[in-house]
Length: 510
Image (cartoon, rainbow, N blue to C red; front, side):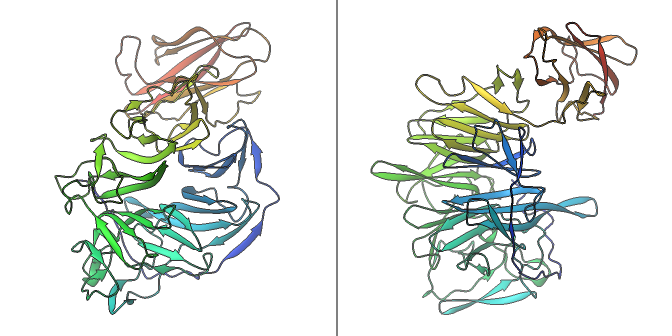
């Protein structure tokens, strides 16, 4: 069972829904990502838009240079939750956290819109409601509706731009749409958990509420919204904690697909991503489907070639996060790496280790959060950085990688450092960062010692690194004989050809 609703509290807070517009002279240009935690990637034209834990970055140079927007108002250096691009129109949602006693609650941090490809931006507060309970008109019905009066647990996890309408998936904030470029937002009525479809002419009895709370409303998992897609035919597909919803009339009526209401169904009802793959003669709708509250659900990937009448599933047991396409090829970002299928899901190839043999770098985690495709280039975003690989007949998928990470440059007075400190081997790796002189061969040896100066691990010995570069070497916290290092202080010795040895410190704390 997956915990779908964590500490959702609704406080009596309202925020004026006032837009603020800004013109940017430029973002800050750098060679590095805003952050190594990459939550979202979107390819549009020659540009890759990257949402990171420290704001928005874009590159049009295959990642060799990045433009940062987090330090230029109105965009923020907080985490980017979602990005949508349609021509020159760009929408970005930010997220932060709110301390609540002994826990930290995810919190929406506003929406931002550009109509000129990122040159100017308009900021909007996170959409919230006023009061506690309202009534929403739906055809011949008035639906009791829980007003969402706080940005806590009200995060815009997905955005879809349609003709004249912007749709947002806001978890506790439910599904909303704007027909006036974000000036106002309207809640959209989705079916309750007890119904497979709704139409305005139906006689209905349910509450529009992601949780009942103290007000005693009838909660619906299908009103906890995580993903939204406006397809090529303008149909709207919405992923919730209660399945997938499809509308062909602009959100007036809906058909719900769940694990329970079809013989050939989606693998699980918690739908974190929905994407459309256009193919000659038709299309496929793909969804990242995770087990919700029923024990017979399972995480995996689900897809339909017939508008939801039946579903196929694969990668069962894998937590899928995102989906992208190159013609007939589908790429799935999962906790265990990037998967590829070129035959409609009959067979799958996994990317394996992500290693950059030119920069002598590798990603320390298998988890891939997001994927985007630009031509023959497949981009991935991870908690450890971004990377791209080519997928062509002459350069097979995953055979060559280029990795992009950010780090604080070493200064003349600080020749090396290790991060993060302290470091917990069960949860992460530590990286030893150093600079290679612009002249010389660049042969490197790094040895790690315990507090008594007994050798623990030879990390690299006589390896060649490119002159004039800054490099990370990874230690996973194990000794030369494969044991996990005990808690305590460790020292490392960095030896570069032609130079004096340099020492640094590592703190292991599990």
